[in-house]
Length: 374
Image (cartoon, rainbow, N blue to C red; front, side, top):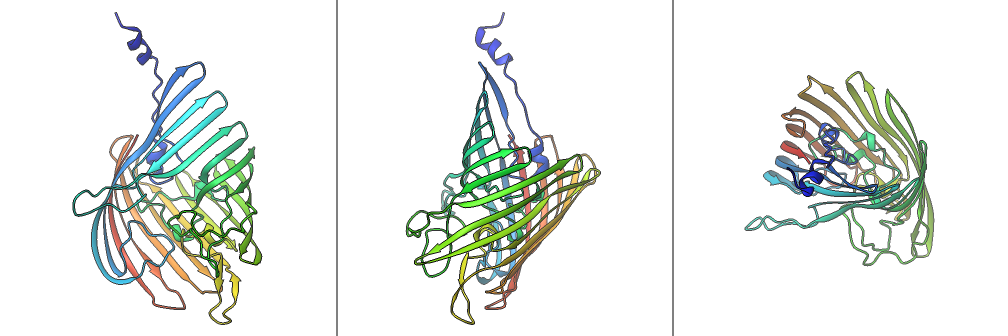
């Protein structure tokens, strides 16, 4: 005879979403184990554990993952072990209400001499009720389906919309509209923001107009493509500027294979490249402030060799008009699905800085990853 507690455990609905592992880096996928608590209440625990071994060799300084910034020039030959991408999340559901919390461990550098510790970092916290969402999540401007199946965290971030921030969003059908966190980065007023995040110290006190984002997603058996428009008021001291940008991106199925892409044009500033582009820059020719214009794109082809082996080849690049920045990242990988939840893989590639002003260089990398989806 079983006890009431044992009966309750037998009624627990456990659901493992292997799509998160299959995408291997698509951060919008929520894996998890779901517990049915009764009375229309559910709680899900999810995330993944990821261990990376990464070797970087070349002219650019080592980074755990490449983004659009200039990491600095230095003869580099470095091997590094990293587990900070590991993340945990919890989703609470009560009828039409959902609350979601997620963190990883990129919150601070650890001590490699003794502890190799890392601080937890908030990634997502939001509440969703029917068509409304409030909290922090990927910007509505982000075409989530465009993220490639990469081992380097995020893949070619240099060409991607890659930004998480607080917002209020309304969605219906394929249409979404949102008011999101305003932040002007660059110009002659210091801010607390940077490509890797920052506090609220020294942020311009005049920022009073939220960023406006509107997107529409077209979906079908063939895949999903999202088109988006971004409108912002950039505020620096006594000067106000308007910035407008647009993008299109998504995933198109080719049988079992797929192509993922995004194209970004206009005055996207901090929304693209995770630290590459300031919203307002000083023109080196005229020494005047200008709203920077950016063109960026990514393309990735994923091929399934079998039900256990897959590969992705990807490329991303971004260029700017005023500062004439030009940065790119390519990579190719081979991933083996050992179990529905456990994968191992190898990826190699190169990140390049080819700016018209300043030094130029590149670094090659080779990465081995082990990933277990919870």
